[in-house]
Length: 120
Image 1 (tube, rainbow, N blue to C red):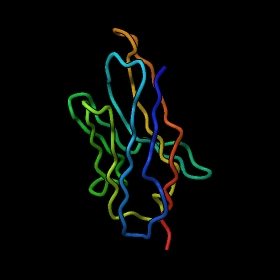
Image 2 (cartoon, one colour):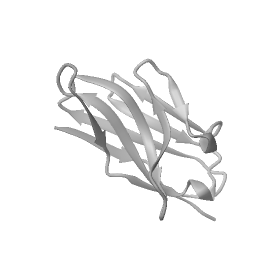
Image 3 (cartoon, rainbow, N blue to C red):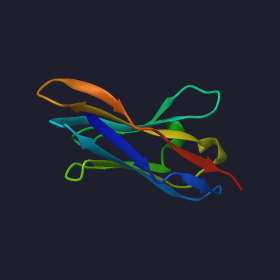
């Protein structure tokens, strides 16, 4: 059993910052790519940022230069630093992880989501 627990969401004014964290626990043999997705009301869930085991990162164009994803493999955490937030960043943010509980047996896991609201 693998669990992902997000924290750090909330209400922030435009131009402000938030840091999301995701703690991964459970039966973990190895990690692969970790990421953050978001889903705004009436829209499809989209990939915001991802980070590979080697530290390679990928961002959706709308957050490039404003958001930064990082991972701490020793602590089994992945974080998303969000700066210069805009109202259009308002969404539920989900942590996502590709994890193997045994050799070569990877599955995708999701956190429960954390609300980020950017509003004055």
